[in-house]
Structures are given as structure tokens and as C-alpha cells.
Length: 225
Image 1 (cartoon, rainbow, N blue to C red):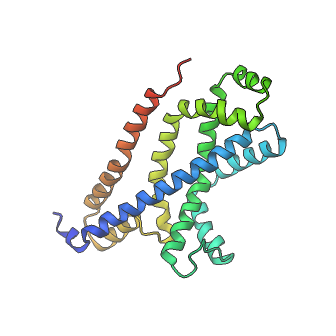
Image 2 (image 1 turned 30 degrees about the vertical axis):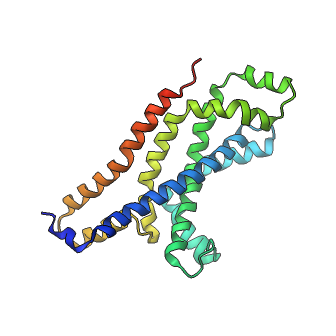
Image 3 (image 1 turned 120 degrees about the vertical axis):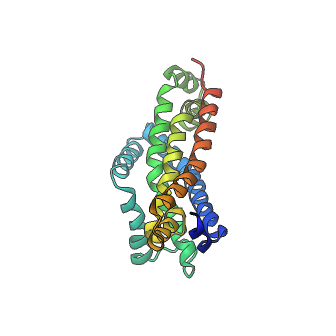
């Protein structure tokens, strides 16, 4: 039943999922950084920063991820010549462009998750911190964000799981991750259900332990109020 797998050596199958893991990890780190900055903008006392943060989130969340990924390829790479440090290596260039697109999209959801956590922090704590002379950035960094992150580990876990599944969109610009290999195998083999089951199991292996661990961590670090 699994004879067709002999045509695809293990490094090919495992390598495709390894690319998925790399996409997920790098995009998650970038999304967390950019999403946190956007959340800070959304609660900033500066109207221009608040307006930019709100506009970015509302616009990006309503654009399909496929459109964003294709834009990074056709728009940034092919039209504007953005190579991200790899002008001659197409595999590396489009991998980095896929990460950029995933970060731009996922950060909007990270921002809203963190902003919801910021709203759970009692206003009195921020007012007390400002009363003793702390600046807005100090209040955010030392008082608000540590508590906000602890209260939104669960929602951020959901964003991370969604990001893992969203990496399959990178196949549209030729990034050699799991979905691209699955497409190739389906085109060459007749066992569509079996191939789909194999790759579905692979994604379950990637996402289920992550969800369980972060769910446990969320309960462990929950802010007691």
C-alpha cells in the first residue's frame, strides 16, 4: 500500500516538513515582534500611531493570505526586484519572501490578541506607574505587556497553530514545503486519500503537541485576579 513512497526518499518527505517547521518558526518570531509593535501603536497616546495600527490591522486581516503571498512574489520580487539578500538563489529568495508575507499577515492577528490582553490589565496599574514618573514605553514594557502576554498565551497558541497550517500557502510561489510535495505526489500517484492522510497526520504531529503544551502553559502562567 505504501510502495509508492519508495519513489520519494525519506529526506524528501522529512525535508518538506522541515521547511514547514522553518517557515512556521521564523514567521512566528517575526509576527510576535511586529504584532507586539502594532499592539503598542494601537494603545499609544499618539493619534497618528493609533491610526496606522488600526488601519494596518483592519486592512491586512481582510486580505486573503494567498493574495499577500503572491504579491510578495510577483510584486516585490518580480516587479520591484526585492531579493532579500538572495538575488541568484531563487529557492532562498522565495522562502524569505514567503516568511515576509506570513509575518505581515499573521502579525495583524497577534496584534489583536495582545491588545485584548492589554485591555485585561487594570487601568489603575498604568495610572499609578505614570504617577511615579514612568514614561508610556516604560509602563508598557515593565507593567502592562508582561501581564498581557500571560493572559493571551491561549489565543496566541491558536494563532500559531493557524500559522502552521497557513504555511501551505507558500506552495503557490514554489516554496518546497509539505503542501508542494503533496501536490506533486498526488499528480504522480493515484492514491489521493492515502497521500492526503499521510500529510494530514504530519500536520497533526506538528500542531497537536504545540497546542497541548501552550494550553498547559496558559493555565500555569495565568494571571490571578
